[in-house]
Length: 123
Figure 1 (spheres, rainbow, N blue to C red):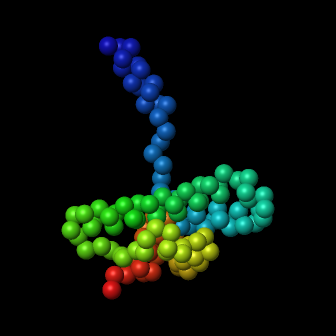
Figure 2: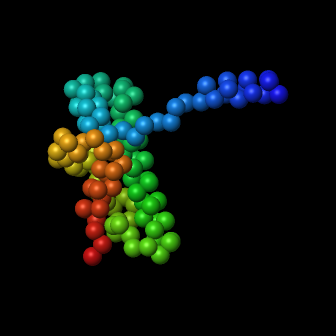
């Protein structure tokens, strides 16, 4: 029994801490640091981190809309098919930079959801 408890404690100590949601403020700081690196930014792990942050927000957004549709709820937005939204890094950066500094404390996911809600309202 004691060995089992020790193993549980040890396993718990090795588990990674749950990741905190990245704020828009952090996202923009990392993006600007990457821009300053020029072509050397391609070697930075932050490039994949930022790309994945936006990609994950987009995936979660579409999943929520689909879940709402299946539940018979009114969708928060009416998205075009995958690949037709024409949202690239310049659009995301412009949207995030347009946020007043006080609102940049929100998560990238929250800001992404708000952007998509504005861009693709249901008519």
